[in-house]
Image 1: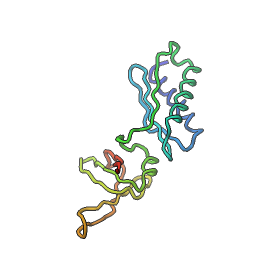
Image 2: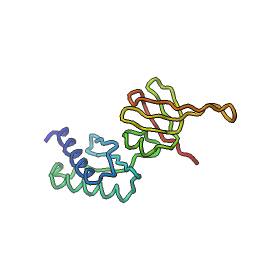
Image 3: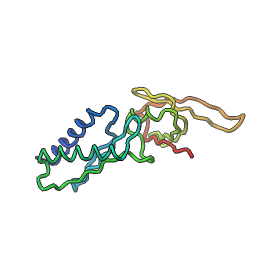
Image 4: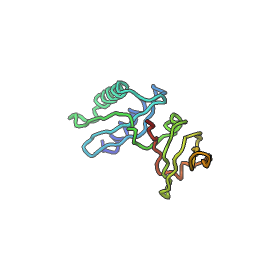
Length: 156
């Protein structure tokens, strides 16, 4: 079986595992030339390390049972996307409504504001410019097609 077909089969196994767990979803799935699969999973309410381990074991078992790597020459890394990772899925946008985000547009302009609403094709942020009595707040609609990255800003 070619590497591309094996990659597709492994991803299909992951999709099958996640289909049974409706609160979790795949954010990113990639493989390095050394057959090292890096899988990022998130959940509508976040994801725990124990849940990542559970997905890793279930996927590992399916790969082994299918005999995709007879010599066992593969590895899996299942984790949540880090806090500095850009949002990649509409469900991630929805779960972060109310949080401060930094949005980089395709033209490299940056906007910062509170994520207010998420639709199928766009989302909106509430941006405040100025301080005190001179502060001006506006809601800006942003089509997903115009976005380079959106990163949640951690508040301390």
